[in-house]
Length: 373
Image 1 (cartoon, helix red, strand yellow):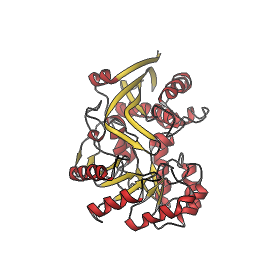
Image 2: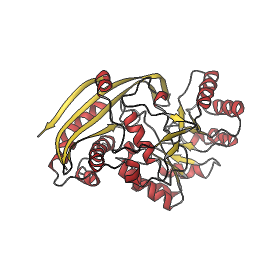
Image 3: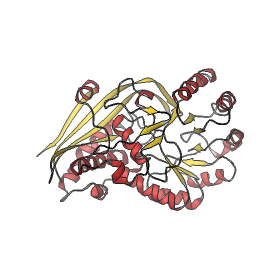
């Protein structure tokens, strides 16, 4: 394909309620969308990609304004210069730019979306997915009290979510988990996410979580320390899941070889794109490591793409693929819905659901016309 136009859209979307983790509280989602127009042998198509970088560099070094700059100045010129552009080669064309996996993932996603729309192929079929629906889990941010936590969890269970994930942090860990397990019983699929908030000195506290039959403890220690995760894994009965530590298939291989993870949370934006996410899935499956699809408060565009990824056979645990209504009173796409604990995998051509023009305009705060042939 040949790129004919590129436009970046910066959005500000209010969340239905504040979302608090160990690294901060979000009240709005500051989103970046990449829109690519392309000429193909089947005519003109438009592809969309979503960058999951946050407004501030707290979860990762990337942030929205920085992603706009690197995309505009370096990533887009690199793919425009490529001959016979295909999505499977975007990562190769961008390899000279150090870092910025979330921005790279958005560019690759937009090119892949255009490619699939031109081919009339759904993302699930392209990936080789084996499910038409995927189980939907929900992430519960740190609340003001245990009582409020129980109310929030009860609401999500009443809605039918298949799994509950509690965000934890030092001082907010054992007691909220104990309360949820006591209130809702042992049959609820329950896991926790620390977002790298602990150290090995906290091993005694984390060991106390073994009493609650959790699916996993997600990213308890620093993202750059696989060795200490391997040590911690030997001290706990609860499986350790790595999230921020896994930034590529290479780091996933290192984690598996060191015994640092029994489970991996695959976030396409964090690892540089959906195609690298598939490589991690394939590696983990070959080594008997469970994977699941994490979320980054995506709009319906990224949320529907995540559902297709989670349809691959190695995704054996419910992912953070909640309904649009979990975060947004109004999404920018047709809303992703959860029915009986499951989200349907889209069968229409493309990677994800395209933004609706009126809603895109409503929530857009800036637009950058990067290229026009």
